[in-house]
Image 1 (spheres, helix red, strand yellow):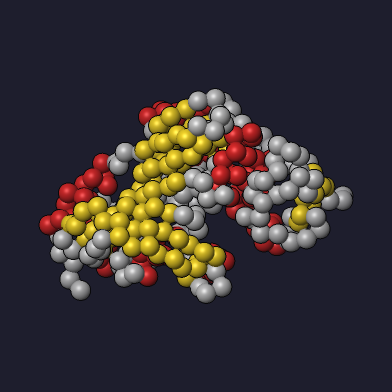
Image 2 (cartoon, one colour; image 1 turned 90 degrees about the vertical axis):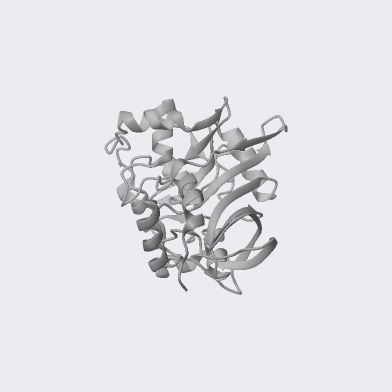
Length: 313
């Protein structure tokens, strides 16, 4: 059996390779798709390509022969009714073009080897619309604003704004240590290191990562800050905070592990203290729209209880 080629139409031009394949093979595990890309079983225009690469009109994707007869309904994802109910409670705004959602911490945007379903699966089930797509991503451990498209036209509009850095995103975080005033952080991050080290690193040959940190409130041994990001690199805020020696509270990847254990014991909260609180972009008519995602109860508990905690250095 020979390989099969998928040709990119105008509807899908500009999409990431991995997102396009998630759309085509909705029930195929995401880990399997990434594995095929990594091994070179999936190629674009006969060449190897990274999962994050943007597809162009008329690009041809080579699919391995064993996927030609793949039954896309064979592994249909079953979403518990309780997750659908919780989904509707977290919708910030919805119209015919997009949904703004306040994501819970520890909810992945995609399904994977460690979770049976993600936000995109829940959204498609809740709306009975398989064309819903993620406009952008936030980490599994990060809560807050995320935008989902309901049609390809809006998805292209949103991605064009991302490309031109026309979308404003603000986060709130609680840092370990005392941060003062405002500070602009310009570093370079190499996300390719994550595959081998399970975390990304700042490297001189990485991609630009630009953030502005502003103190909201001093919490004694901790600092409540707002971060405006100008780029959207993987784990950008988490890496930059850690490299300032001000790691985010309860960051299990880049943080202070012994301090996190103490904080969880004293507060009863072990969620990552990072929240996507604000997003602003232009809608399909060119009108600037702004949405805010309220902090959840656990983030508020951290804000109230950390004031009285002292971390020993």
